Image 1: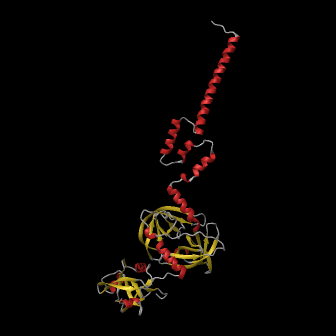
Image 2 (image 1 turned 90 degrees about the vertical axis):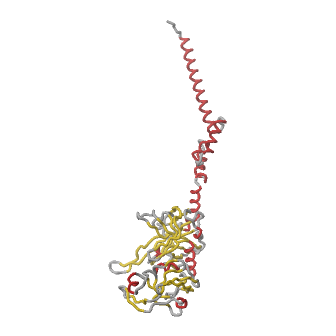
Length: 423
C-alpha cells in the first residue's frame, strides 16, 4: 500500500483547482464569443450567409424573420420594426389609409319623434339612429330618408364628440336619399367625402363601409361588390333600381353611411341589409353614387328632385280590374285620365271613358284607356315600376312609352314635363 505525505496531498488539491479554473474560463469564453457573434453580426461568414438567406427567403417578410438579425437588447429597434409599414400587408395598409382619410367625415345621426302618452298628450321620444357623410364643408350631410323619418328633431354628432342640431334641406323617398344641414362655429374646418363613379364598378371589386352607429368611434367593415343593377323595393314600396349589392357587413345604425372604394371615394350610400339571421351579416345594398350625387345636387339647390313625368292619372292594374274591364292582360299601369293639354294628351295617349268605383275606399277612376307596359327598356307591371322607370329622367327628356290598346302594343314617344305638387 502506497502512503501519501501531507506535501503530496496539497499538490494534488492545487492541481485539481487549476484544472477546474481552466475549464470554467474556456466555457465562459465560448459563451461570450457566441453571444457577441449573434449581437454584432460578426459570426462565421457561412453562418451569417445562412441567416441572410433565411430572411430573404421568408415569403411573408415577417417581423419574426427580421428579428433573427436584430440586436437582442435593442428594445427600441424591435418596437420600430413591429410598427413600421412593412409590418402590414398591402391590403391592411389600404384599409388603414381609407379609414384615416374618411372616418372624420362620417357622422352619427340621432332623432327625436313626437309621440302620444297615456293622457293623449304629445311627448318627445327617442327616435332612430343612423349614419351620414359630410359632403360639403358648409355642413351638408347625406343620409337615408328612413334614418330621419318622422323626426321632430335631428342631432348630428361629429368625430370629435361635438353635436349640432340639424335641419332637413330636402328628402327624396324614391331614392331614399336625404340631405341635412348643420352650422358649425366660424373657422371650423370640416372633413368631407367626395363622390366616386359607381358606373365603373365591377363584381368582385373590394369595397369598404364606414359607419358611426352609436355616436362613439366609427366602425369599418370590408367586402366585395357581389352584384350590380339590383332592383330593390324599400319600406315605402318604392323600387330603387341599379342598387349595389355587397357582402360587406352593415352594422346596426350604419344606414346612411358611405360605401367606399379603395381610394376613399364614396361609390354608394348604405341603405339596407337582408339577413336571415337578423344580425349584420347578410346581403347589403347601397344606393349607387351616380344616383345619390344627382339627387343630392337637386335637393341642395331646389329642396326637391326635379324629375320628368307623364301628365296623367294612373291606376295599377290587377286581376280583378282586368276581369271587370274584360282586358286580355292583368299587369301594367292603367291610364285613367290625361291632363288637359298635358304631354300625355299631346303624345296621343288615351285615358278611360267609363267611371267605376273600386276598393274599400270606393276609389273612382276610369277604365277603357291605354295600359302602359314599358318605358324605354324597363318593363312596367306596377306603379312602383312606373316611378322607378322615370326616377332618373329629367324634365325635357323624351322616353319611349309602350302602351297596350285594343289587344295590341304601340310605342309612343313622350316629351317629359316637370313634376308639380298636383301630380
